[in-house]
Length: 199
Image (cartoon, rainbow, N blue to C red; front, side):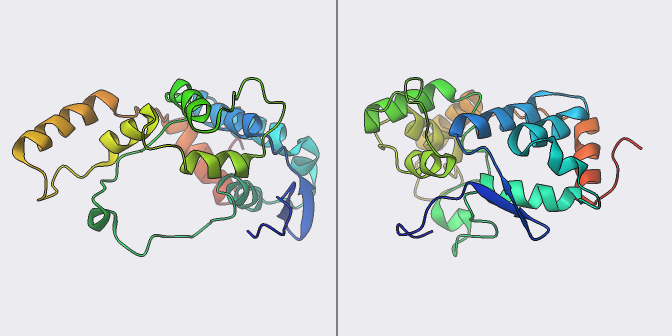
């Protein structure tokens, strides 16, 4: 993405452009719907909320194409982008670094501390801008510290025995608890494969 280009307000699905909600709150709500419900309608509700129900009504519309388009937008166009170094070489583990729900207060205060930006008061902030700003929050914010605790590789040879023990305790305390039901997993898998999850 270049600074001379406008941020996207549409996604391409099967060669057609569809308007997508772009405010950071919309994408956070999408995340809540997808992960916060245990029934199969969550995925359809989330798609409807972001793109509108007409997308789902289109003949021959494949669910995997919709999922790819939403994934591209949610990941800020960085689909497939990988670090050239393995996480262990960077001193990181494979733990989830941040959760928008569990860390919402920390995210709020990080934006306030780093940018002087009150996320409750601003009328609009594009999801991509929100993400870019989140990636560059001040290292002195508590959120930065919690992410460090969660992701530091405690097998790193440069850490003392005491540091390893302390980081292990911090990781247990600050670990992100993910809840995924078997029903949700089956529905998402069916949609990604282009099958009807309810038929």
